Length: 157
Image 1 (cartoon, rainbow, N blue to C red):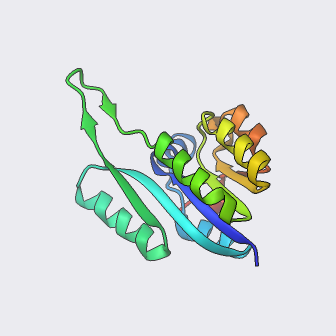
Image 2: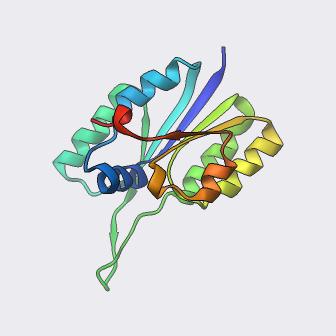
């Protein structure tokens, strides 16, 4: 059976599905779809911790589905901007698991991950599936994917 690892850039998926569709992503449906392809051996969802009740409920729902939720604190800068980027953490975790699985599934539209996917495909001979909102996914990420899956109506709540 094919071994699969899933990595979700939660903030990216939240904002892109909200911007494109005004709806939320259906993580349970994604889990069902991916688990039909093989055994999910690792599944991480990377989010920013703000500590509000709605967010905690969402994080618990992700855990119930089977995700490990990794949190970074929400940092409000003195100029009013905010920081909370998981790109390096996601990249490290993907590199750590790429030699142990057949498929890496990445949910993000961030083009910075294109280099990562090219590297793991070349060095580890893994399949790299990307799920992203079509209008908001970088072409460099789509090009680096083995398979690009459009997030559309069937993966929304």
